[in-house]
Image (cartoon, rainbow, N blue to C red):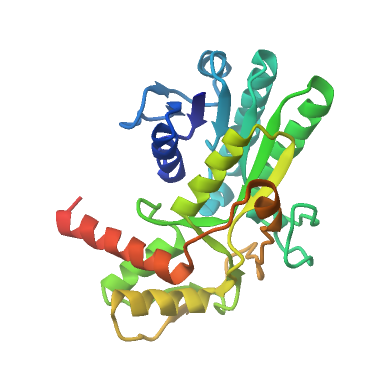
Length: 299
Protein backbone atom coordinates (compact mmCIF):
# COMPACT_ATOMS: atom_id res chain seq x y z
CA UNK A 1 0.00 0.00 0.00
CA UNK A 2 1.29 3.46 -0.92
CA UNK A 3 0.55 5.75 2.03
CA UNK A 4 0.98 9.53 2.23
CA UNK A 5 1.70 10.77 5.75
CA UNK A 6 1.07 14.49 6.11
CA UNK A 7 3.17 15.87 8.95
CA UNK A 8 5.40 12.83 8.48
CA UNK A 9 8.58 14.59 9.63
CA UNK A 10 7.24 15.12 13.15
CA UNK A 11 7.36 12.95 16.26
CA UNK A 12 4.26 10.84 15.58
CA UNK A 13 4.62 10.94 11.81
CA UNK A 14 8.18 9.61 11.93
CA UNK A 15 7.14 6.76 14.22
CA UNK A 16 4.29 5.89 11.86
CA UNK A 17 6.60 5.89 8.87
CA UNK A 18 8.96 3.46 10.61
CA UNK A 19 6.05 1.14 11.39
CA UNK A 20 4.65 1.35 7.86
CA UNK A 21 8.05 0.55 6.34
CA UNK A 22 8.39 -2.35 8.78
CA UNK A 23 5.04 -3.63 7.49
CA UNK A 24 6.30 -3.38 3.88
CA UNK A 25 4.17 -0.39 2.87
CA UNK A 26 5.46 2.39 0.62
CA UNK A 27 5.46 5.47 2.84
CA UNK A 28 5.73 9.01 1.48
CA UNK A 29 6.21 11.99 3.80
CA UNK A 30 4.45 15.29 3.08
CA UNK A 31 5.70 18.04 5.36
CA UNK A 32 7.41 21.43 5.48
CA UNK A 33 10.77 19.63 5.76
CA UNK A 34 12.11 16.37 4.35
CA UNK A 35 12.09 13.10 6.24
CA UNK A 36 15.22 10.95 6.27
CA UNK A 37 13.06 7.83 6.57
CA UNK A 38 11.28 7.73 3.22
CA UNK A 39 10.65 9.73 0.01
CA UNK A 40 9.42 13.23 0.79
CA UNK A 41 7.21 15.91 -0.72
CA UNK A 42 8.07 19.29 0.76
CA UNK A 43 5.21 21.75 0.95
CA UNK A 44 2.23 23.02 2.90
CA UNK A 45 -1.24 21.50 3.06
CA UNK A 46 -2.56 25.04 2.55
CA UNK A 47 -1.21 24.89 -1.04
CA UNK A 48 -3.94 23.15 -3.02
CA UNK A 49 -1.74 22.41 -6.05
CA UNK A 50 0.93 20.73 -3.93
CA UNK A 51 -1.75 18.71 -2.11
CA UNK A 52 -3.18 17.59 -5.45
CA UNK A 53 0.20 16.35 -6.66
CA UNK A 54 0.88 14.59 -3.37
CA UNK A 55 -2.44 12.78 -2.98
CA UNK A 56 -3.48 11.71 -6.47
CA UNK A 57 -1.44 8.50 -6.77
CA UNK A 58 -1.84 7.26 -3.20
CA UNK A 59 -3.74 4.28 -1.83
CA UNK A 60 -4.37 6.02 1.50
CA UNK A 61 -3.65 9.28 3.33
CA UNK A 62 -2.78 9.51 7.02
CA UNK A 63 -3.43 13.17 7.77
CA UNK A 64 -1.46 14.38 10.80
CA UNK A 65 -0.24 17.80 9.59
CA UNK A 66 -1.55 20.52 11.91
CA UNK A 67 -0.72 23.33 14.26
CA UNK A 68 -0.71 20.99 17.27
CA UNK A 69 0.99 23.12 19.92
CA UNK A 70 -1.86 24.46 22.06
CA UNK A 71 0.08 27.59 23.04
CA UNK A 72 0.94 28.39 19.41
CA UNK A 73 -2.68 27.84 18.42
CA UNK A 74 -3.94 30.16 21.16
CA UNK A 75 -1.41 32.87 20.34
CA UNK A 76 -1.98 32.68 16.57
CA UNK A 77 -5.52 31.42 15.97
CA UNK A 78 -5.56 32.69 12.38
CA UNK A 79 -2.69 30.42 11.33
CA UNK A 80 -4.20 27.59 13.33
CA UNK A 81 -7.46 27.88 11.38
CA UNK A 82 -5.65 28.27 8.06
CA UNK A 83 -3.65 25.08 8.57
CA UNK A 84 -6.02 22.92 10.57
CA UNK A 85 -9.26 23.85 8.81
CA UNK A 86 -8.41 25.20 5.34
CA UNK A 87 -5.46 22.82 4.94
CA UNK A 88 -7.57 19.87 6.07
CA UNK A 89 -10.30 20.92 3.64
CA UNK A 90 -7.73 20.77 0.83
CA UNK A 91 -6.84 17.23 1.88
CA UNK A 92 -10.54 16.23 2.08
CA UNK A 93 -11.43 17.63 -1.32
CA UNK A 94 -8.42 16.06 -3.00
CA UNK A 95 -9.00 12.65 -1.40
CA UNK A 96 -12.63 12.84 -2.50
CA UNK A 97 -11.69 13.79 -6.06
CA UNK A 98 -9.17 10.95 -6.44
CA UNK A 99 -11.13 8.38 -4.38
CA UNK A 100 -8.30 8.02 -1.86
CA UNK A 101 -9.30 6.83 1.65
CA UNK A 102 -8.56 9.43 4.33
CA UNK A 103 -7.47 8.57 7.86
CA UNK A 104 -7.76 11.78 9.87
CA UNK A 105 -5.72 12.19 13.04
CA UNK A 106 -7.92 14.04 15.49
CA UNK A 107 -7.53 14.34 19.25
CA UNK A 108 -9.22 13.38 22.50
CA UNK A 109 -9.00 17.10 23.30
CA UNK A 110 -12.27 17.44 21.37
CA UNK A 111 -14.07 16.07 24.45
CA UNK A 112 -12.88 19.11 26.39
CA UNK A 113 -14.75 19.67 29.62
CA UNK A 114 -17.42 17.13 28.83
CA UNK A 115 -19.46 15.78 31.73
CA UNK A 116 -19.49 12.25 30.24
CA UNK A 117 -16.77 10.11 31.85
CA UNK A 118 -15.27 7.91 30.68
CA UNK A 119 -15.60 9.60 27.30
CA UNK A 120 -16.40 7.28 24.41
CA UNK A 121 -16.74 8.04 20.73
CA UNK A 122 -20.40 9.04 21.18
CA UNK A 123 -19.81 11.39 24.11
CA UNK A 124 -20.76 15.04 23.84
CA UNK A 125 -17.76 17.19 22.87
CA UNK A 126 -17.17 20.47 24.70
CA UNK A 127 -13.80 21.66 23.35
CA UNK A 128 -12.10 24.42 25.31
CA UNK A 129 -9.15 25.27 23.01
CA UNK A 130 -9.01 26.62 19.45
CA UNK A 131 -6.85 23.61 18.52
CA UNK A 132 -9.57 21.18 19.60
CA UNK A 133 -12.24 23.26 17.85
CA UNK A 134 -10.34 23.06 14.55
CA UNK A 135 -9.93 19.29 14.92
CA UNK A 136 -13.64 18.82 15.59
CA UNK A 137 -14.36 21.00 12.56
CA UNK A 138 -12.16 18.69 10.48
CA UNK A 139 -14.10 15.68 11.73
CA UNK A 140 -17.44 17.22 10.77
CA UNK A 141 -16.21 18.27 7.31
CA UNK A 142 -15.07 14.71 6.65
CA UNK A 143 -18.42 13.24 7.69
CA UNK A 144 -20.22 15.70 5.43
CA UNK A 145 -18.07 14.74 2.43
CA UNK A 146 -18.63 11.09 3.23
CA UNK A 147 -22.41 11.55 3.21
CA UNK A 148 -22.48 13.64 0.03
CA UNK A 149 -19.61 12.22 -2.00
CA UNK A 150 -18.94 8.78 -0.47
CA UNK A 151 -15.49 9.68 0.86
CA UNK A 152 -13.96 6.70 2.65
CA UNK A 153 -12.58 7.80 6.00
CA UNK A 154 -11.62 6.97 9.55
CA UNK A 155 -11.22 9.43 12.42
CA UNK A 156 -8.58 8.59 15.02
CA UNK A 157 -8.82 10.49 18.29
CA UNK A 158 -5.38 10.38 19.89
CA UNK A 159 -4.72 10.85 23.58
CA UNK A 160 -1.66 12.80 24.74
CA UNK A 161 1.32 11.03 23.17
CA UNK A 162 4.77 10.69 24.70
CA UNK A 163 7.93 8.65 24.21
CA UNK A 164 11.40 8.83 22.64
CA UNK A 165 11.57 11.63 20.09
CA UNK A 166 8.70 13.58 21.65
CA UNK A 167 8.28 17.32 21.28
CA UNK A 168 10.04 19.32 23.97
CA UNK A 169 7.04 21.52 24.77
CA UNK A 170 4.89 18.61 26.00
CA UNK A 171 4.46 18.26 29.77
CA UNK A 172 6.21 14.88 30.04
CA UNK A 173 9.29 16.23 28.25
CA UNK A 174 9.31 19.42 30.31
CA UNK A 175 9.06 17.46 33.57
CA UNK A 176 11.82 15.04 32.54
CA UNK A 177 14.18 17.88 31.61
CA UNK A 178 13.45 19.70 34.86
CA UNK A 179 14.03 16.54 36.91
CA UNK A 180 17.28 15.74 35.12
CA UNK A 181 18.51 19.29 35.78
CA UNK A 182 17.51 18.97 39.48
CA UNK A 183 15.05 21.84 39.04
CA UNK A 184 11.62 22.20 40.61
CA UNK A 185 8.85 20.89 38.39
CA UNK A 186 6.49 23.64 37.27
CA UNK A 187 2.75 23.01 37.51
CA UNK A 188 -0.02 25.03 35.87
CA UNK A 189 -2.98 25.21 38.23
CA UNK A 190 -3.37 22.86 41.19
CA UNK A 191 -2.02 19.76 39.40
CA UNK A 192 -5.20 17.77 40.06
CA UNK A 193 -6.26 17.88 36.41
CA UNK A 194 -6.09 14.40 34.86
CA UNK A 195 -4.84 13.02 31.56
CA UNK A 196 -4.75 9.66 29.76
CA UNK A 197 -1.32 9.47 28.14
CA UNK A 198 -0.39 6.94 25.46
CA UNK A 199 3.08 5.64 24.66
CA UNK A 200 4.15 6.18 21.05
CA UNK A 201 4.67 2.48 20.21
CA UNK A 202 1.15 1.60 21.30
CA UNK A 203 -0.26 4.49 19.29
CA UNK A 204 1.40 3.54 16.01
CA UNK A 205 0.45 -0.11 16.47
CA UNK A 206 -3.22 0.85 16.74
CA UNK A 207 -3.04 3.26 13.82
CA UNK A 208 -1.48 0.74 11.46
CA UNK A 209 -3.96 -1.92 12.60
CA UNK A 210 -6.81 0.35 11.55
CA UNK A 211 -5.12 1.28 8.27
CA UNK A 212 -4.67 -2.39 7.37
CA UNK A 213 -8.12 -3.48 8.57
CA UNK A 214 -10.07 -2.30 5.53
CA UNK A 215 -12.69 -0.76 7.84
CA UNK A 216 -14.06 2.72 7.13
CA UNK A 217 -16.50 5.16 8.63
CA UNK A 218 -15.14 4.67 12.16
CA UNK A 219 -14.28 7.15 14.88
CA UNK A 220 -11.95 5.47 17.37
CA UNK A 221 -10.21 6.61 20.54
CA UNK A 222 -6.53 5.68 20.85
CA UNK A 223 -5.45 6.45 24.40
CA UNK A 224 -5.14 4.56 27.67
CA UNK A 225 -7.60 3.88 30.45
CA UNK A 226 -4.92 4.94 32.95
CA UNK A 227 -6.10 8.27 34.36
CA UNK A 228 -3.29 10.23 36.04
CA UNK A 229 -3.18 13.61 37.71
CA UNK A 230 -0.43 15.99 36.68
CA UNK A 231 0.97 15.66 40.21
CA UNK A 232 1.14 11.86 39.81
CA UNK A 233 2.93 12.32 36.48
CA UNK A 234 5.49 14.64 38.09
CA UNK A 235 6.06 12.25 41.01
CA UNK A 236 6.57 9.24 38.72
CA UNK A 237 9.03 11.17 36.57
CA UNK A 238 11.09 12.33 39.56
CA UNK A 239 11.25 8.76 40.88
CA UNK A 240 12.26 7.41 37.46
CA UNK A 241 15.00 10.01 36.96
CA UNK A 242 16.23 9.17 40.47
CA UNK A 243 16.07 12.58 42.13
CA UNK A 244 14.66 13.46 45.51
CA UNK A 245 11.25 15.04 45.46
CA UNK A 246 11.63 18.76 45.23
CA UNK A 247 9.22 21.52 46.02
CA UNK A 248 6.89 22.07 43.07
CA UNK A 249 6.44 25.51 41.57
CA UNK A 250 2.81 26.41 40.91
CA UNK A 251 1.68 28.89 38.29
CA UNK A 252 -1.77 30.23 37.35
CA UNK A 253 -3.82 27.73 35.39
CA UNK A 254 -3.79 28.26 31.65
CA UNK A 255 -7.04 29.33 29.92
CA UNK A 256 -9.08 26.43 28.59
CA UNK A 257 -7.56 23.84 30.91
CA UNK A 258 -9.42 20.51 30.78
CA UNK A 259 -10.01 19.38 34.35
CA UNK A 260 -10.75 15.70 33.83
CA UNK A 261 -9.74 13.40 31.00
CA UNK A 262 -10.83 9.78 31.18
CA UNK A 263 -11.00 8.05 27.82
CA UNK A 264 -12.96 4.90 26.98
CA UNK A 265 -10.97 2.72 24.56
CA UNK A 266 -13.33 -0.25 24.56
CA UNK A 267 -14.34 0.32 20.93
CA UNK A 268 -10.72 -0.03 19.73
CA UNK A 269 -10.59 -3.41 21.47
CA UNK A 270 -13.92 -4.53 20.04
CA UNK A 271 -13.13 -3.53 16.44
CA UNK A 272 -9.37 -4.05 16.19
CA UNK A 273 -8.36 -6.20 19.14
CA UNK A 274 -6.10 -3.31 20.14
CA UNK A 275 -5.21 -2.42 23.71
CA UNK A 276 -2.15 -0.44 24.92
CA UNK A 277 0.66 -2.56 26.36
CA UNK A 278 2.86 0.09 28.00
CA UNK A 279 1.76 1.75 31.23
CA UNK A 280 2.97 5.20 32.21
CA UNK A 281 5.71 4.05 34.58
CA UNK A 282 7.29 1.79 31.96
CA UNK A 283 6.83 4.34 29.19
CA UNK A 284 8.47 7.07 31.25
CA UNK A 285 11.42 4.78 32.02
CA UNK A 286 11.98 4.22 28.30
CA UNK A 287 11.59 7.93 27.58
CA UNK A 288 14.02 8.96 30.31
CA UNK A 289 16.63 6.57 28.88
CA UNK A 290 16.22 8.23 25.50
CA UNK A 291 16.65 11.70 27.03
CA UNK A 292 19.84 10.51 28.75
CA UNK A 293 21.23 9.18 25.49
CA UNK A 294 20.41 12.40 23.66
CA UNK A 295 22.07 14.51 26.35
CA UNK A 296 25.10 12.21 26.47
CA UNK A 297 25.57 12.52 22.70
CA UNK A 298 25.07 16.25 22.82
CA UNK A 299 22.55 16.08 19.98
